[in-house]
Figure (cartoon, rainbow, N blue to C red):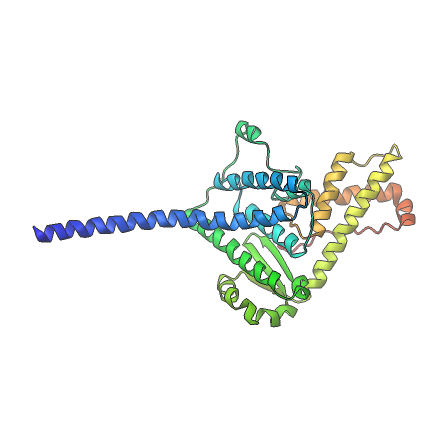
Length: 307
């Protein structure tokens, strides 16, 4: 009898441990991703100056998190937002509420925001993406690891910030480091985060990364300048390349891209549209642009998988 009771007791203990372990896993799975996204949301809100607007962006980010919980966003969309916010934070950027909402659109495609009002969301049937528990845990870990590195970078020598770029591709969020960052990387200030990032293969080294990033910034700034100049020219002409609302959207997109916001790989059509518009503008107003000192680059987006 005593032996049977012990067996029953052992079975009960094993069941309790199993259930407890499952509940802990479920909590940790949700807590890790939620914690990481909360940190990203806080950083995004802090990029906006106006206190009233901060509340608006905080609410928008809550809707973004609900989309994540409802599996309405792919992991790559989530990671593109995280990397973009970290790039903006690193550069100490200040953005408008509308620009913050565009960052949350996750892909900088046609619509200025992918975050409709709650009542609109209730009416629309949304596509969902299946994300396993293990994948969700890994997603949370990746973002957390990148966040810890970002915090270490912010506390380190600010002169080295230009040697760091947060990116995302089909393999997920990563850190691109200029090879000139090597000494800083080996320093004690990065000791805690270095091992985990190396083991997770979340770091990519690139010679002359700074030069490539500067070229990208100049290209997008040139696009924005050209689009703004075109808006002014169209206002005083019967010639129309695109309507003003569309030009505004493309101009803001170019501005954000110059500040470090990433574009999803499938935004190639939008990049093509910008080039077509600028080519048409050059054909009509090229001489005027030249007189005004507007320099335009029509170089295509990099064919690299990173942004």
